[in-house]
Image (tube, rainbow, N blue to C red; front, side, top):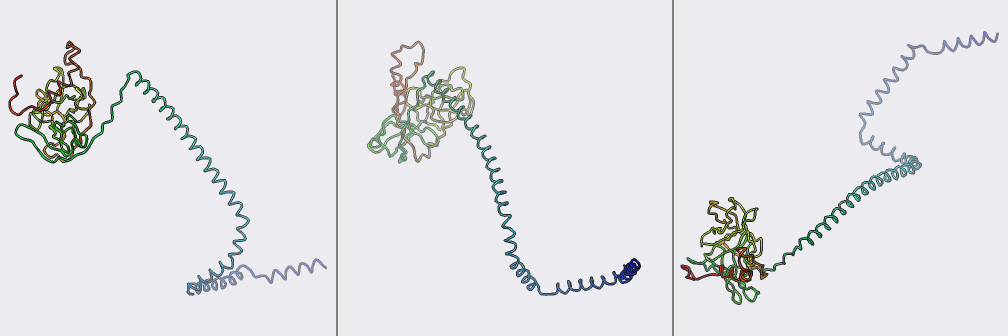
Length: 317
C-alpha cells in the first residue's frame, strides 16, 4: 500500500511540472522583458548612470581596500625580489666594467714605463715653453725694396731684436729693430730674409729666400730631394733663430724651381704674436770636413745672412 501511494505521488508531481515547450513559453516573455529593460536603461540620462557608478564604487571602496590589505605584503615581497634581481644584474655589470678598467690601467702603466725607458735611452730633451706677447700692426713700412711692418710692442713689453713673429696662420717674420713701445718686423718675403726650413714628410732641409714677391724661393735643396706641390714647409730650427716646427706654407710651382705659398697673408696683417725665443740651438756644420771651431760661429753667420741689408745691389765683400 505504501508503495502504491509513493508511485501516485510521483505521478502527480510529474504531471504538475511544465514540459519543454511550456518552459520555453515561460522564458521567452522574461527575455523580452529583460531586453526592454536594457533598452529603457540606454535611454536614461548618462549622468545618472555615472553618478550611480560612482556611488557604488564609493560604497565598495572600503571593501576593496580591506581586500587589498592581505595582498600588500605579497606585493612588497615581489617588489623586493625584482629590486634584488636588478641589483644583482647591476653588480655583475659593474664587476665586468671594473675588470676592463683594471686591464686598461695595467696597459697604461706598461706603456708609461716603456715611454720612460725610451726617453732614458734616447735622453730626450723636452722642448722649452715659449712665452709670447700679442700686438697690433700699426704701420706698413714696406717699400720698393723692403717688406716690413711696425707693431705696437717694444722694449717695454720685453721684445728684443731677433724674436720670431707669427699669427694664427703661420710665420710672419722676425723683429729687427725695437723701440720703447714699438718694433719693426722684417717679413718672410723680404729680399733679405733667409730662413732654414724642412720640406715635406721626408723633412728635406733647405733655405727659404725672400725676393720681395708673394712667394719666396726654396734654395739649397738636396740633389736627391723629391718634393711635390702641396708639401708642407716649416722652420727647421737650424741656427737657433727660429723654433723648430713653425708653419710657413706649402710648396707650389715647378718642382725644379719650387716656391712657397705662404700661409700668412702678409698684405692684410692686423694682429701678430711675438715669441720670446732666445734659446740658441747648436748648428751643424755645412760640411763634415769643416773645422769644429767654425760651428761656434754658425749662429753669427746665420744672423748676418738673415739680417737686413741696405736696399739695392748687394755690397761687395
